[in-house]
Length: 411
Image (cartoon, rainbow, N blue to C red; front, side):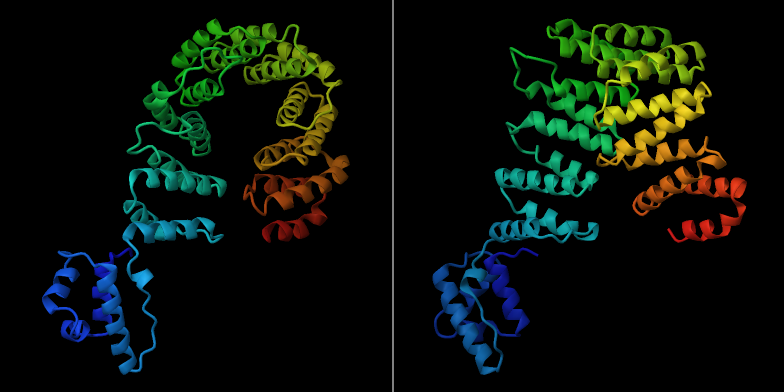
């Protein structure tokens, strides 16, 4: 796609079936033109002007009108590649996977510095468009051939984020270990480092629990401020649970919320409720359900954390057969979710779990959440709640089943 000036000259001559003798005229020898076309001599701007003039006269004599621009003819491969990449990045049109080779060919023509800069721009473009596999590829390519990687910390944070979307924590862990020694050390950290946190979360996701626990304990030992201690103790409690040490995990969660605010208490208690539900520990479900419920009365914010707390309380209420409370918490969670972005999967889960406990008297609530589900399913093709809606109508309102079946079938 990207041709040198000498190659473009040859292509033009072949395109219009012009002989070397016709093109050179009286100004240049055929031997000299031949050396230019095979790359043994460079095409200078002076020679290009002569050849363009001769070419233009030949085309006019044949009745062909085409403007041969010297500036376009003399553009180097690198200049053409930079122009293509800039135009592509400005365009709103998304490049298909089949045409990615054009980007690769353009990058090949660049020097290391320019290649690094364009790879950064490409990874940001693909990340913003949620094409995470390509985003990760170009983020990695921005590291190649570079002695000192600019903004390394944020790039590694992005690597963890992208790998989380791709559910490939091992990839991010490998890159982190390879480049972490190049990070600038903060001699006076004010609080926990978000990159350390991302690394530990990736270790947990990769089920490297022993390494995650050892790393977290080491960071906790160095921590001086309350926020860092709180964050790392939460991670330790999470890791203990993942290791199957549920008793110690519950103790850690119960201990770390002492003296904390209502929100932190609710978050800690909700984690204990999840563990207790998993091991069917009715005593702890009841104990920490009541504690969480009591502290929730002071909360009114709409956040991911609040959504998770409400969903956990609904799960706890269901486990305790407090179905009226469970329905109320599920519905409140849906209200909170409507104020948040990118929570479609959580909403699907809430609707699905709510449909497991509704009865005939909940008809109006079912109708309301059905409308929400029909909006979500346009983009999130999870049909499990749809099946549960149909089962609800089959059980309680069989006369509506045919219409509802056709409604869901059209989604």
